[in-house]
Length: 358
Image (cartoon, rainbow, N blue to C red; front, side, top):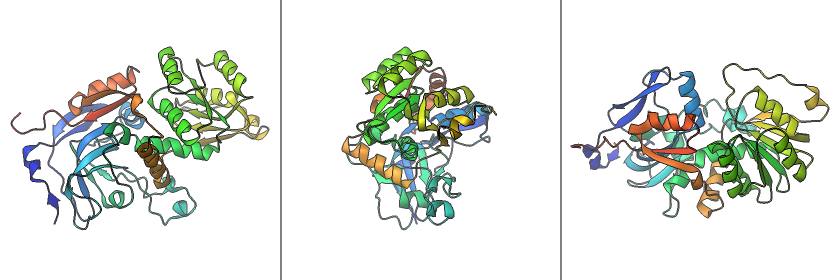
């Protein structure tokens, strides 16, 4: 048996449903009932992620599917056996957790675990209510104290993805990092780098001067447009970057990243490449100068725990990146804002059409 707050009778449940070819619509669906070990959340905020934008752009999601995975919500229903949370609790939870037993998990590559790839949020985060499956409840859910705002907590999952890339790059507190792209994920790299490695110097690269000025306010040691200006600023700090984090994606950004990386340095790819684009570069730049190119896909439980503590302690405050908060009713408008680079982080709240009688 599951326990559910009777107030759900006063609400409708709306979701942003994919129609195919990048189109969406708001539609009403029944409330999902949690089974043993599961939770049902009433949405407080959900973040629009670059992965959501990518999937919408290529039209890869089946008709009727619901995207979104950066979720903060209140518990409105408990499945049998759930004792760690109670009705009304405000929680943040990831949509992926590993199995803990496979060869990937045993070797510290949890994000490659086949179980990890399964989405544990139903129907998805862009919904007035979200069902959280048992593995995520048991391993990844965090109750939020009053001092942690929704706008900060919603960054737990994307910031954990960033932190994993930083750890895998091997950069240290006395190092120099370059971040290509000053969008919401690029600027989040800056903030997480400063939180995890307080002494690190970060150079931001982008074509948008207003974003570069903002990056400087957030603590960047330097900010420049791509090319000679970026090379000059980096040259004043180091012979090259210990790590370059590419949040743009594609062959040209990869070549630029390699040109900025010191001997023995690392390029971290943190973006989808457009289409089926194939990179071409001199392999000797890797062999002769011992450079590395790695990808980072997501953050595992360890990184999520670290980020939660950074946010809880105030070491990491990602809230300056939030530029827009709007209801799910305005989802298409939010997507257009993000695509046109008129917004950084966009958060959605429940639909304004969800109260019975209104």
